[in-house]
Length: 302
Image (cartoon, rainbow, N blue to C red; front, side):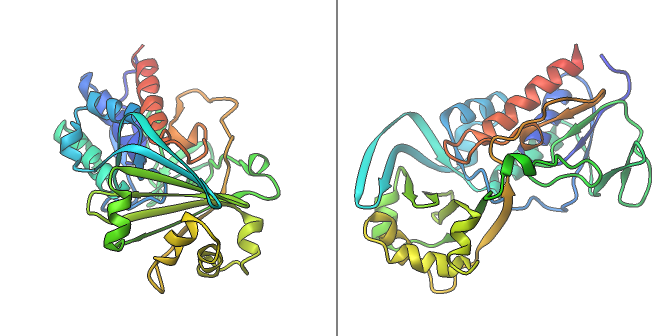
């Protein structure tokens, strides 16, 4: 076991989980988070049943999250459609709600949270005021956003036609809300796919993963892309046609699906997307983030 308390950078699911696990073993880490309040990250709005089990092991009961229970899957491609039951109940839950619950749990156990950005320069980790951080171990949990000076450099994994992520959240019409009740939908289209699920407040969370070239075909304009998809026959067209006229769209570029850290460094524990990035498909990204925190803490304690 190390003697100096570790530093965790990033208070998303992986970082907060690492803090909870360390505190549960009598270790008081320092948790750095650049945002004063939990944000609403683009990815991770659907949690698989395995992920819910991991959250429960961290002290979060499924009922505490108050998310939208999901037990069915519907997949469409054009006018073709398939549906079936999930092996166990999953959940639609916003990242703001999830991140808040985990951070509150860490704070309740005694986590010290400092709101500051952290960068790596000249072989040292520094807060945004230039002060060097004293720690033998760093748990890097900044999600898909790289730490300055310690970028993953995943461009090779992203390739020449990388995936992009788009997300919009809206109040669904009553008919759509009824059709989405208890169901997550995945709609396949040329150049990408879209997932839609209800979340804790009844809003519909629509996320798209698509190739950069597909967005370029729409002039690089997400709203034009939405209009193009709304004009297609089949269930996806109906879902896109129900969007409000000027929806707010969040975006993330150069998503390096398939990238993973090929080597480590002494005292540096990469968690979640800083360790590897899987396709946003089955609600397992958050589960992997939590599992990486568990493994890292186990090795730190050994």
